[in-house]
Length: 449
Image (cartoon, rainbow, N blue to C red; front, side, top):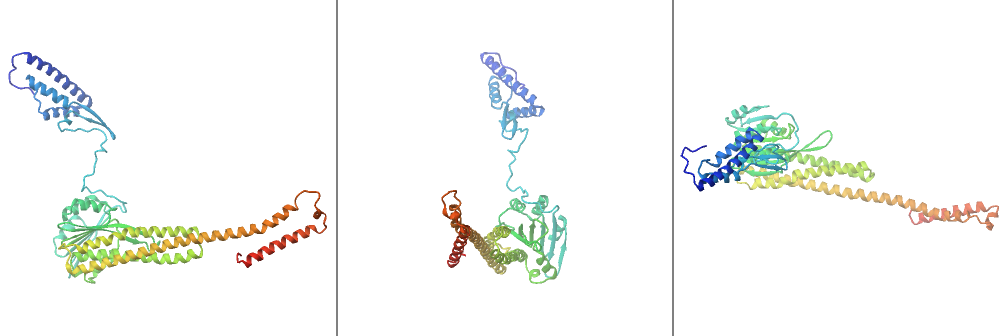
């Protein structure tokens, strides 16, 4: 950009400024040449950097000197990162950073950005709705966003159950409609998150682990469950369509129990209670199998039995990781002062706390039993090895004197009178039998056999 002001009279200062202008023009030309070599986008960035730097190229010597300094400060620089070549144009000093090439080193996840962490257990997410009151219940399967927006405006308790948390847009839609914090949505999508209870101004957030037992193979699987307790609604998020909430659904449909006449906090209690009840069932199932396995292990300690023992230990370790944090979580719920938790229902949460302590005690007892069984297996294995070594030692002891006699009379000396005896062979065999019989009788008397 050229100023409309007339040029001053040439002087020594103007000659110096002319030299400075020439240097600035050379620097600018080099920078523009480098930008042209990179492409039109780079030259545009350099031009934008020149405008952003506020340099007015005029015939004024002082302004030319400033332009020279700005060009030196904002000159084209080639920076090479660990992730690839990155070109930083002249506008970088003025705040205009242009990056070309891979950007993995700069792709840092912003806190509150939901990213699914875990195993994708099903292809499509499914949303089930329950709106109930003391008089009626309404159920919608595979609902859409318009369905829950419509039901939320109606009176009653709304329960939204989401299967498969890998659908990030669905989670964000629910978060927008129900006022969830971005960090809450991020924790819901992270299936490896530790169980916790967190309070927000408009809702409470609870995460826990759900234990599901396969009725055919008796294997157990651990899934992540997230619950949102709000004013008149409960949101539950699961990894898969299979859950342990069918008993709660049946109670809502039939109007059994007190769930239809209570608020949303009681529904949240029922869901957590169903999860803990199935933890009980899983622990009892493993306990029964451990007792049966202990009898088999004592009768016959085989390698296959040992692999079964380690499988039980792995199950109990997963159960312990799933159940142990629940005690802290439920303790935080009981101490909570949120108005969403009615005081008359805190007694139910305290009962859940007691059940959780019982589950933890059973898990620890089963783990101690398995540790004892492992020690018993090692002891039985050692005893079996000792028995084998004892038999081999007895056999070696019996044959030591027999080998000595055979070695003596097997020597090739000419002057051995016993070799000339007619009954010498039979006498030596009789002596060997007598020695072996005597050793066996001695071992039996010592109860070594």
